[in-house]
Image (cartoon, rainbow over all chains, first blue to last red; front, side):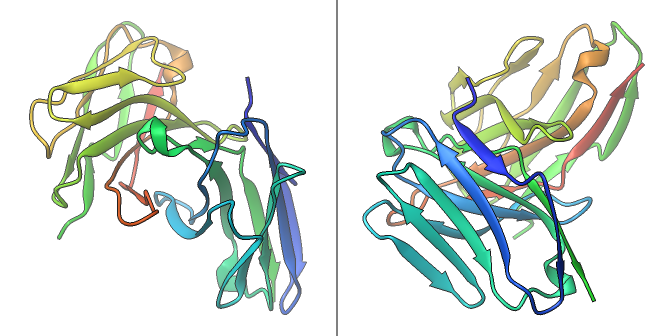
Length: 113
Length: 114
């Protein structure tokens, strides 16, 4: 059972544009929603994370928007740069699960100069 | 700190062979994980451990085994390798800091079974 669905699978954006990646989850017990960034040949690294008690979290050019009633959350990358080109994974977990993460399928982002 | 280290970086196995993927962390994290990453499929949890001597199955444990005799090491054993185990394997570790369970990933092991 796929518990976290991510879209789109790939995304091409021009430099300076806004990149938007969406995720939907099924398990209402999830209480931690991180986004990971992965460059080719590297392991994923935490980019930004949110708890469901807030609807938005911003760190620099990266923003998570969270809609608890719709069971959806999204990553917005403002002023996208070629250096942002990477694969992005959304994930979800619940505190009682020992921080086990359920990952989305990933989105390959390409930012053209 | 070296963080999470994995060896080997690459490996080619023949069908039916066995091998152990090594993972070590020097951050004194109690949680450790093994994932496999296949194209377009995200990361799937194979096994995880909440501390030395404690392991449990994840989403896709068949064909794998783990052990956790120390806090630092979490090796993944493949018995009777099959082509379906061709994948990139990532080890990760974490600890609870406030409300965050940030997982730190190793660089991965690319395994091909032919």
